[in-house]
Image (tube, rainbow, N blue to C red; front, top):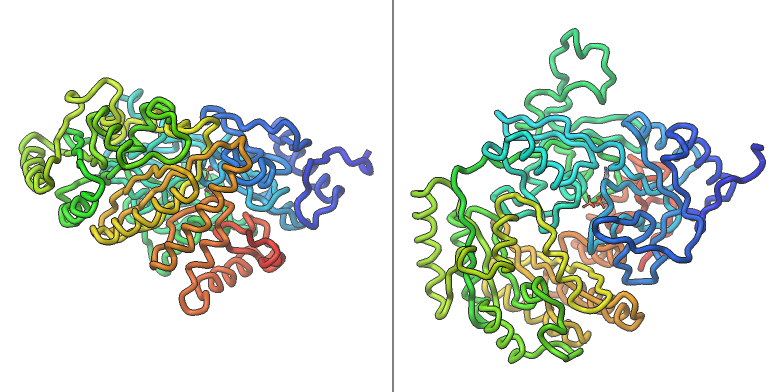
Length: 560
Ligand code: ADP
């Protein structure tokens, strides 16, 4: 019966009536099959899932109420043309959508939508193919559902590891495409994922299909591909070799944005360098951070440090090796004396620098001697290779990560406190001792005020550092959640006052962070709003993503 409402979600999208929602779901179900459509019918007993089994209904690391960011439904298109049709239906009604690839996005909101009631588009379920691995050109083309682990396994299974590596983040379960769109990082010389992508295919809000860069230039027409639909045609053979193409470079519009649904991406693969050695340099005193960062800058700028190395705080390493109760009975933040004791017990420094050398023996030996000499200026700095450390050491994990072998060990620090959940606070810092010290002391002080331990790491890009502060809280405690939320909100403002902004963020603070990028009367946001309204006139794709709201939404009311 057409008049009976079949599909009732626990929450509807804003300004969408039950019958409009029902109509949309019927259309989508007819298109892609009911088995690819899930309605979230209740807010009760929401399951947070786990890293291995992510949920798509809400953020499993909820810092607000568990159902604050809740999907009305989750739909999984089978192919590009399904995505185009779903966008056409959504435009006609309109209905807000929230595209995800794998939906782990741990610490940044998981698969959850910014606007409760949005329809989550699970791009990764069926669009999960490795379309090409080009050995000669050292690149791949992937669909949204291909994880770092999938690509690594492919290289292993096809005996290609001796030729190519994939750069991986701390955890291997995220999608290459989603992580790259979010401008995530890994730790080999190809650690800047956005820099390493080349050529994308995007479904625009209108449902039209676009290829960027050299992908806009058709591959020569040959009989075998002549009749193929655009999405099935091969990319131009330089699309994965030269990212910019001709004219305005628009790839950035689809990153951390809400202007399209990306269906394919090209990624550079790292040629096996013909030799590899990871190392750890322990830096004994807390205040040595200053000197260490000033040593790192010239080495990294000149690429003596070849990869994206990390300077990790002692408690982050301690947390990978055990939860807080293993070290202390305290519930309040650990003191300097406690941390000195932990460092001593673990044979680590108050800061620990993880890097790697790439290339044949003579190249590695030359680089290592430069690096060793530079770091030896720090009194008490010590140098380790994996075999010098215990079997469960963080260096043995980093040894894998820094050569593109995915691991899951870094999940352990989330259990620092019972029922651990986490948020990332990730400001960009100048790669200079003074700046690092100031950013560290401000963030550490606020963590202490919130009653939380400082767990953090500086991830060194070429000229800057992504300072990643891991805010770990007990998600069963409303009080702890309030503290964590207060902490991140306060840190955003503190850092903005010092001229520091975040590179990426959780759903709950996207508006606040966008409001700190306010130079010249918020022209950045205004420009983004003009684009949003022009390209997505019905405001259907990811409203509120990165603080950019379509005109249909009163952003003052939505602001968190
Ligand atoms: P991961 O693969 O790391 O689990 P997600 O799939 O959760 O990451 O994606 C992270 C974010 O990237 C999403 O919240 C969304 O904003 C954006 N995103 C992911 N996939 C797409 C896509 N195919 N098109 C557009 N945006 C996407």
